[in-house]
Length: 447
DNA sequence: CTCACTTTAA
Image (cartoon, rainbow, N blue to C red):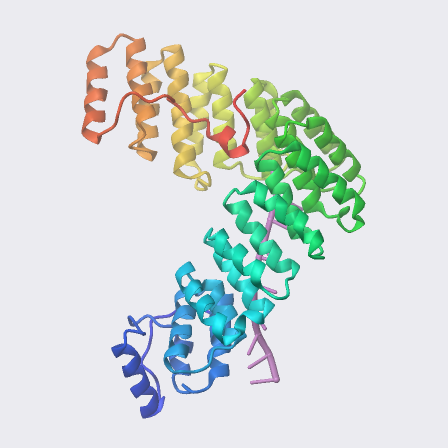
């Protein structure tokens, strides 16, 4: 289904035209771009069930404004909204509209439907109105796991770890059976808090529940959870046990690679990656990025370049901007500016700049920093200009640029950079002069 | 006649 510019209401007859006019006058149809199916339906204005299914279709396909419009028209026509239409409207509603529906539901009795309550909780939770969400949850007559999951998702999103975990415990009292979504959310809490004791507890819970032992998503979440809690050995034991179940799963192996990388165990990343190849598992771009990142962080240039070359030659994939960025970063740290320069230019030639502007800026920024360290003003100057192409208002790049000149005693040029910063309204005293976007992307702590 | 709530992993 696609939104197209509205056409005239075709052959709809006088009634449809009159209705259309009325809707325009009441500002329910704000502009011309209305979904054609909606216009078509104006020919059967009194048919509530048709409006309901159209509303449901809009909501399902994410046509937010068309869905809200249908709901508004439905209401303005005085057609009764049943639990179906309320649910559909709530999947696209703002918190304000949710509150209106909520208030109306208190009298109309619609809140006795778990579906309506579930949609209401989810709507509140998505807008981080967790107080409202939990109120609905507490007051509804019959709860189900879906409602609990929605509320839990709201706690995770708003980083309310304690309340989230409390809800997980409460589900047992309420005899709500946790499913994969529940556990996934709980593991996210343990990871992000991070809360090792809760993580261990959740792991123990998973082991008792055989339904979850072969769930690949949960196994990866467990590995990541332990890694983020700094318990690498536990991460590895989960990985080891699961290898028998999902042995060929490159995602699981990548979880383990990043578990090591996040904890600074770069030699283990390379070792595990090579073991993965021996097991006959074909790496994908994310696995390759993980091992490249480890080489970059540990200064393992030879292996890093080998892995980079293997992307195309062995695995038949075109390296992405993030792979280039990683290698350039590695070469800069190793002081090999010429090669870094070559790679950076190669990266710019690629059509697929999947890393986006930030990545490009940080790559050129890394090159700039490396040039400052080694006093290579020529390349550094170009790197600075390239970095500013992608991120013109980055104060750190300006500072690094002027430091580059300072290292060579070029005082006039420093003045020019300072002037440029003044014009752009940038402050020169910034704490961090460069951003290691690969570390951020992979979530590695600085090592 | 049809239609409704969470959709998680590197």
